[in-house]
Image (cartoon, rainbow, N blue to C red):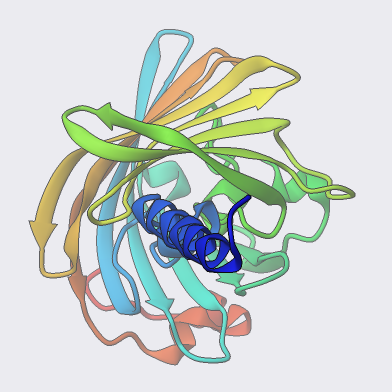
Length: 271
C-alpha cells in the first residue's frame, strides 16, 4: 500500500499534468469569440473609420452592383458601436442612409433614411430588421448591424483546428443557449489563429446548410490585417453576393453622422 508521501507526490504530478494539458489547449471558445467580436465586418478594432464598399448581388443570373460609403465609430467606453452607411450608387437609391447602434449586449438599434420621402424611420419590428439590406443579397439588416456578435445568444465549443486557404484556424461550434430565440440551429465558425479574423461561417437550420460566408483577399493597411472581400451564399433563396472593401482609413467623424434626427439634413463633404 502506498504511503502518504507517495500519494502526495502522485497528486502533485497529476495536478501538474492537468495544468500542462490545460495550458496546451490555448484559448477557450469564449475567449476566441471575445477577440472576434472586437472587430467589425469592415475590420479594425476601436476608433473611427471611413470606408468605401462595393456590393455585387447575383440573383436569377443577373448581377447588380451597389457602392456605399461607411462611417464607423467603435470602442467608445459606455457607448454602443455606431455605423452609418450611405448609398452612393446606383442612382435610384443614392442618398439612402442606414444607421446602426450596436451595444455590447442586447439588440442593435437601426434607422433608415429615405431621401425621396425625407423620412427617417427606426426599424423596430422583427420583419423590418430581418429584411434584406439590399434586395436579393441574402444579407439582412440584422447581419449588417450585429456583424460577428454571437456570444449573447449562442454557446460556443472549440471542436478543433483546421487550415483554411493556407491559414491555421480555430473551429468553433455554436448552438443556441437555452431559452434564446435564434436565427440558426447551429453555426460553424472558422477563426484565423493569429489575428482572429473570421475566415468562414456556415449557418444551419434544422440540420440543413442555409448560408455560407467566406472571407478572402487578406491585406495589411493602416487599420491592420484583415479580409477585404466577403462572399455570401444563401442556399435557401438561391442568391449570392460579394462585399468588396475598396479602401478604408482612420479619420475623425462628426458626432452628427450618428444622430438619427439629423440624417435628413446631414451634409457629407465629397459626396
